[in-house]
Length: 130
View 1 (cartoon, helix red, strand yellow):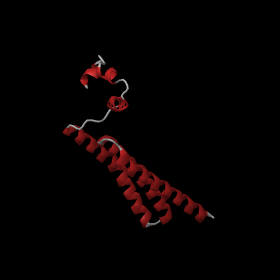
View 2: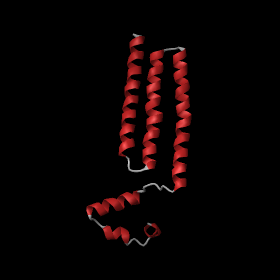
View 3: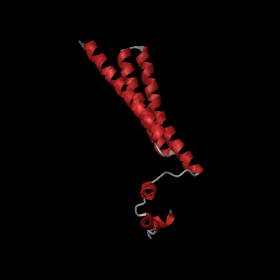
View 4: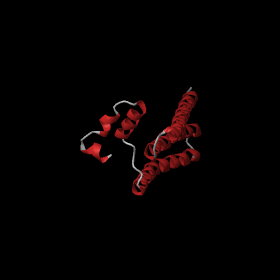
């Protein structure tokens, strides 16, 4: 009975890890700019790969294979956020700016033809900086 519970739990972890990995891949393709794509990649890296490795560790049992999988999970857990941060800093250093809510709202209003002049004639400092 305990073996069935471990198998079910491990396959649930593997299935959910696969789901988050697939969603992250879709996000990587569909996101509009570098920074949101990095976010999708980091979610895939930490959550998707972490759940997959946890499921594989349950399948391996208490063995050397599970220990190796634990080391891989720790490596991904500690290096993934650092790599994402370094990439974001490099993108900012090169001059790539993130798309902000104002940018999306302005693009949406221009595409729909609604209130195009309202954004352009905004006297606030944020409106003048665009």
